[in-house]
Image (cartoon, rainbow, N blue to C red; front, top):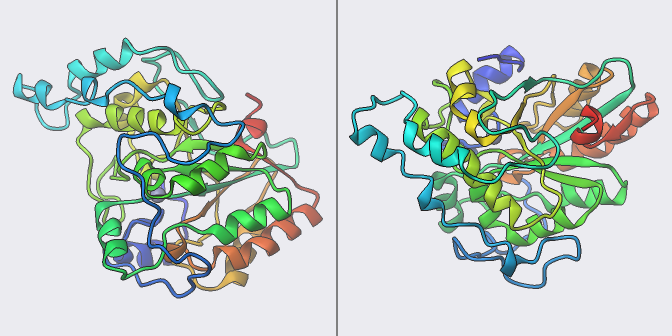
Length: 332
Ligand SMILES: [Zn+2]
């Protein structure tokens, strides 16, 4: 596992939970703007309600095949596979699915390349925003302990400034916030990518996240891509490990999904960060040609992002950087 966060951030987040925002003991939201409902409602397994955006695939016709057909790795364990050992059964089924397409797509069975940045010879930077949602977070929403894990102000600012961005969305977050997901999918400046389905750690330890069994990894990632496919007809096949935690075995385990794994080289520090200026200073200081910046749209777990973002955008552009989507940065 490679850690790219400052030592202080690691200490804080080891206590608080995932750097990407899943913290069982997270502090409550301190800034909670517009939203009033704790979460949008979307019945699991159904197409999103309401009129889809023009650019989104028609929900009724893009309903994915039942996931149970591919997500039953326990069968492999029952047959004698040990925990942590890749179960052949689901992998084989994944390999039989249609070939993935879109930026980052590779033939199924290909071990994912791991990307930390784009070309260093061009002053372009990709802003990426992670979301996550865990069962513990859903319970806090239901109990009104936090107001929102969706940061609408960040999206407002990106759209106001016509800033391209790439969103790594966890499947459970998507189902909690279908309307915001549709809004992201409808903007041609934005693209959607996977941040797993359940936001569990793919390598232990991982900032207090639970650990997904290796045999379940490919099905989890595949499921997240299938959820995203309900919302966009411009899919990418980029995947970011929850917490940025991975190892070689995890890369092998998700090979059947035919994705590209994307990390980052510019850690904004917005997860659980409360100082907008510090976040902006750190982000700008780390930026180099080709950088991939990691930020969050999980309001309660990243409460200062919206206030830091205008500075980040303004200062990077003033420094001669063009802000682009990940697929544009990577040229695919
Ligand atoms: Zn995360």
